[in-house]
Image (cartoon, rainbow, N blue to C red; front, side):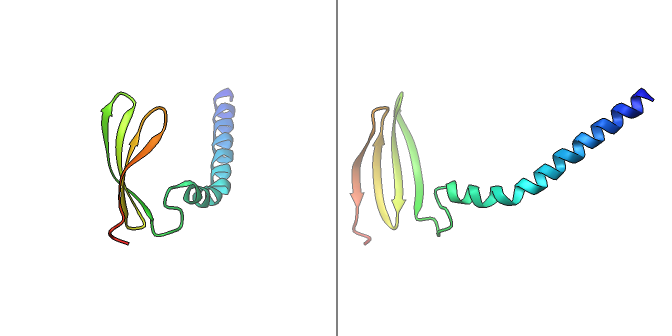
Amino acid sequence: MDLLYSFLKVLLSLAIVIVIILIVLPYTHPLLLKLSLKGRSKGQVKIISIQPLLRGAFIVELEIKGIYIVILVTERGADVIHRDSANT
């Protein structure tokens, strides 16, 4: 009897968790789209490559709306190294 009671408690808990997931799931997908880099647009920001230089320093190659940009990212901040605006 005690085993059956424990089994029913587990099934009830599982059912509650599944119902909560099914209620929350439709709201999480639009939220994730809003928080991503692309959003709902056609992906205007594209990360081409990330190359580590030193500890805490990276060179990041980006393409933003057809413009090629190279950025040096360190712990203190980010600086634009090169911007190719010939495509515009």
